[in-house]
Image (cartoon, rainbow, N blue to C red; front, side):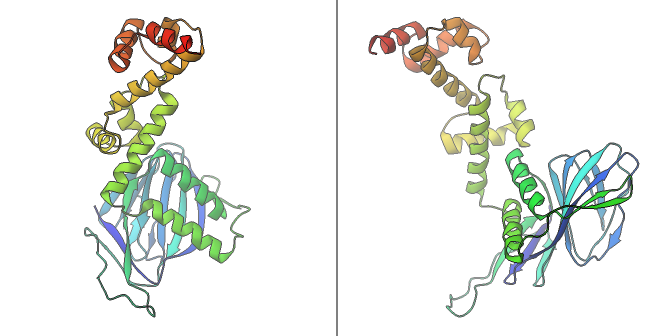
Length: 295
């Protein structure tokens, strides 16, 4: 994997942004040494890009940053309707693109000079669902042009009228999404997203395969992240949430145990009863008697 290392100050600055809609047969036009970084994010469809000797197949949720000095083109037309969003930004300072992540040199702090640092961003990657939503929100604020390649139209969007400082703030927020984070921060971010998904969908069938597909990580990595953050596996997390919901329903309703089991996602009442007693020490009916007897 290659990384873009931006040395700051000076900081990268926003140029322009827009979206492009391609239909089957459309081809991304080749360009050479544009002078700006071209950040592409695919919302749906598939986009084929080549820069210098590297070829990329961008699927929904994928992003790619093309360099200011490289030659890029599309070797293959899109085979399905494809919508992607792009942002051009520039950097007047030093930058490198290599398979190494540059580390900032340690220098003596000064109250008169800014400390040199670096921003490291993978050239190509995938965003989680939450990151994708945040990207789209920021892009909407920055976007000023919609290109329909099929009809060869360029439609100005009623945006791009923000102040220069606000545009820079939005670009910084966007680069923060993409930049390489400390490993512990990335683990916690993934674990929190998985737990949010479980809390919202506990009554559905949630498998490791489903989580891996949704968050685009290997099942083993998701297990490690959740254990590191919460001390449980994904399946244990699902069962814990379900039992908590069952306790609420047993305490506050007269709903039969079989209905509660089905409502919170268990296939059979018998399995629900066994798991509930294992985690609480009592059966669902005993728990209800205890809770409702004290009210």
